[in-house]
Image (cartoon, rainbow, N blue to C red; front, side):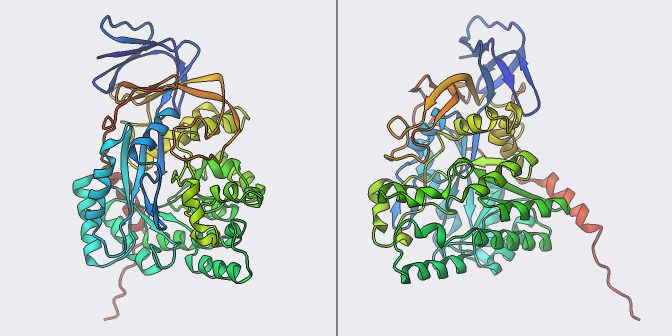
Length: 479
């Protein structure tokens, strides 16, 4: 059935204008004034904004991690996404060390079949030998994966050492895939964790002390330097510190291709949460990297405004109070993760657009378009144009809402945004040309979400190749 959206203002990363939208068979087929279609379902968007559906480039649904499994699976997690105006998530396949990448990928594909919203995957590189390189090739060429994740943290588990980074970045460059990095020095984190425990500090307040900002800054600089030496681009996930943002800015100023992602939580929540006298509340905020002192938030907002950080995400990885209590006597055993896939757009709009830090068009870029461009989904997603996918959110900039775990769609009983009142909320989310969420009601069914393949980024890499070839050394003839 066709869908006609009338009377709204289209807002893209480039412009804002009044127009009607006609959608059919999952696509936008016409944009114009006073459109009509006798057989179409009509949505009155008068006084509201129509924007590309949000794309969250960093989620962890149903993740097996730290001895348990995240509470939000692909059903509840994507329901929460749709409730917040996000129509596509890019989740992470994380193989166990020595596990086949293809085996892990298939496991995640099986789990994701119940998704309400669209989904795609990054695949983590947690170990290395020749078989990993071969399976990376298969994932890119046959399964639509064009990005690979590297954890520089989590020693004795999934940490990628420098030799793995070098090997994997090199393979990414060959394949036209984007290497992404969780930048924290795992050796330093492990050392500082043991130091905290030896001092008798075993509560959530020790978590940020074991992962100071310098730990992230060092790893960010190291990863960027490795990528520069190899001639590869790099994408840094959940940048939380001034040091890491400075490293990205310096690299970009010197011609390197570096992308930076920031979480909505890191922009608005500070490290005082770990001092809460209620253990459960403090533990609910344990994630890595941790929330930071307020001056880092100021630096992150400036980096967003300057274009140093191009995308916003959530790192949605929901663990309930009972799961967090696994670390009651040892903070290093508190499962790392918080929720946010539902709240991201609302928080960014209220704290960004309403405060004057960013424009509505920049909001669209940060929450959808830039991610689509970086991971080669654009212009099918992240845009409003004829022929693009009909993944849209109808936004009421005047409506207010108080964020709370009592009303969110996530399966956990706490929220890092608890009690925050925001102005500007999604009222209708359209996914694949169908109304998926409307005025508090989930209409999409399990399995309505589609797997999104992402092609390798050949034009981008050809440009890199050309740039690098100009500086190729030539052998000296000494005959």
